[in-house]
Image: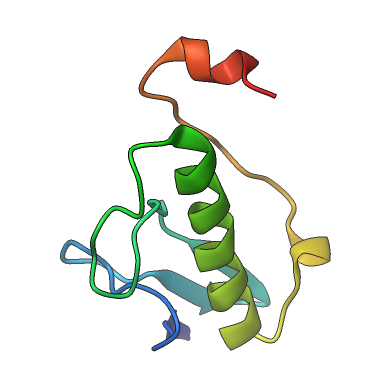
Length: 87
């Protein structure tokens, strides 16, 4: 059985999909953006966007009864490879 994962503390999915799905003891989260609950980009700055992405992930983990320690795999997509080298 599948259960949709969402939270009012984070943005709604921007497309015809769920923010996350729990099934058979696993949770899968859809791609997250650096947007606030209104769906607006928090900044043009990649660092601020990245922080917001992980805040949004944290909200969904919390809604699932999980923490960052439970993450098994992540994928990060960059718009500009120069951002890869930012510290």
